[in-house]
Image (cartoon, rainbow, N blue to C red):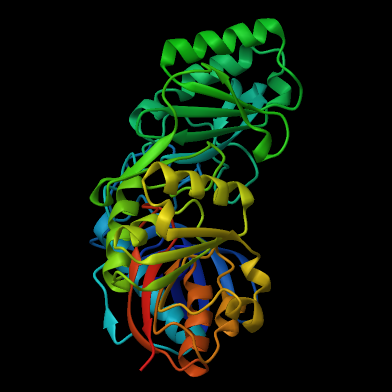
Length: 432
């Protein structure tokens, strides 16, 4: 059995060893370890391998808390100390910036992180009846598989949500449409927990009564989703607490629908917003753009500074929620929202929005390459870029520095998803 010395983690949290110049990507191995491995895919320049045995363990190796770790694909690095996870993600960020964008920040920001357990306030779980595994299954997909993991608890979900997994199995097994209910979406607000049932055919009257009884017994709101995400509607109870999250430091509350995009980790989001605004430093009288603004997670905190803010987003539904949030929080006077496809941005379309002193960019994983290309001679003097993919941040940072003339002032990792390979970050760029 081959033996390797693990140097680092890659962007999928696999340990990287090298044999005669070839990279070996080993599932489950940690930096600093000496491991035995078995390759299951061999290519001329690399191999993919499973961990067989650890001959010398890393000081960062810990016992996973979840009994389903290794089978469930919801987590990738529960076997790594949470503090070491943060350091590894910072290294992934820095490596991506250099190897992809050929840039290095002038300053490394302290990483942003929070509690590694019970943090996940949004989740989409698969639902499937598998008789040989005991009936209904509800869970994330198995590791590198399309099968639903047989999980009975989940340490990254809030405890009250984890406690619902087994009762939900019983509920779904009792429904006439058990074979036509492929997905459960969970959204946790500060006063309400919503469960969205993706149904491929209508509930019967008996089904409806069972769902109502479950909602009343467990204190949750049930939504039904017969088609796409926008088709979700509140089924029971019709009245009562609504989904919302707050940013107390800015005196803000955001109402949202259970299928809206919101940050998964509310506690880390609060810290991220605070740090992003400290970097942006909005001032009264400035005109600031919030690109890919969603329902205003950064837009409204910027507006609290007294600056005039323009939030641009591709989703009409999120823009509508943003306008409602601005009005509800008394900020309609200095916030403007617009709908635009920023993946098809041009210098002319960006210039038509008017001059901006500063800009915040918070794109999806695809990044903001067209927006960055569209920045002209009158581009904002300061840009704060919040990223959920270090590779596209690196690509865009390279263009901002090499072509658009920005200085790369600072960057740091954000551990929005503990125990996963997912790396978020925040970066600061300034024109001289």
